[in-house]
Image 1 (cartoon, rainbow, N blue to C red):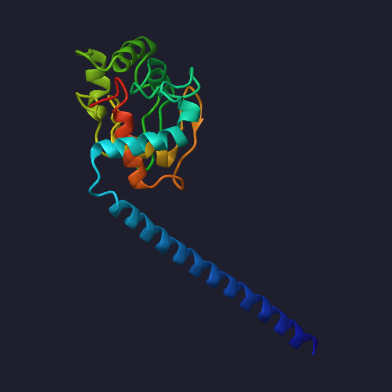
Image 2: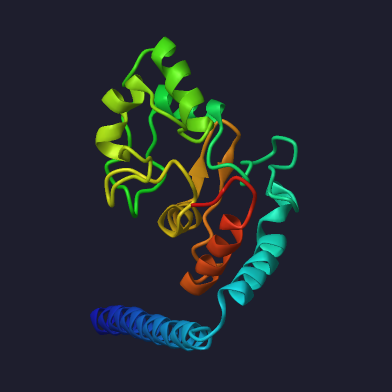
Amino acid sequence: MNFIRLFLGLAFIIITIIMFWYFQNKFLQTKEKNDKSLNLKFKQSWINISNKELQNFGKTIFLSKCSKCHGKNGKGNNGKAQNLTKRISKSSVLETIKHGANNFKTDYPSGMPANIINEKKAQSVSQFIANGMIGENKIYNKSCLPCHGKNGKGMNYVAPNIKFYDNRVLASVLKNGKKSNIGTMPNFTNILNDTQIKMLGIYLKSLKNNVE
């Protein structure tokens, strides 16, 4: 009798676990399907909109989601966050050279190794990159060009664009978050969809000194 009760009890627990797993899995599948459908409808609704309108919507997203840290003008809120009117600062380049980087795992999985050049060379190339890569720099040509390219626009799946914020870099930052010498930025994976990221990118390109 005790054996039968034990068997029934175990059977009840196992059936309950299986049912819970089944309905939870079904719920997640339905949610994922609905999310994809909503994102597709959202994307389709913006197909015929002008670039200027996309920029305006991007500004609205920026003021809502980004300005708290980066400031309403995008200049970084007195050093609290990255100055988005410029692609990158000298201190950020120095930090990356010294410690390496693996922020953008989805688009640039190999990352960048640390200390590929010494401090003196790092100072020179960091200033060159921060100034917008005007002219030439022998250290950059030898140590950085193979991955980032002569114009600094990077290579797909190898290295990001370090001259200006293109859509790929922006999407990588928002999807992966980012660690830098200033601090850590969280990811926005479940906050912004691909169309909103595109709008935000168009707006950021409109900021001074951050254009192609």
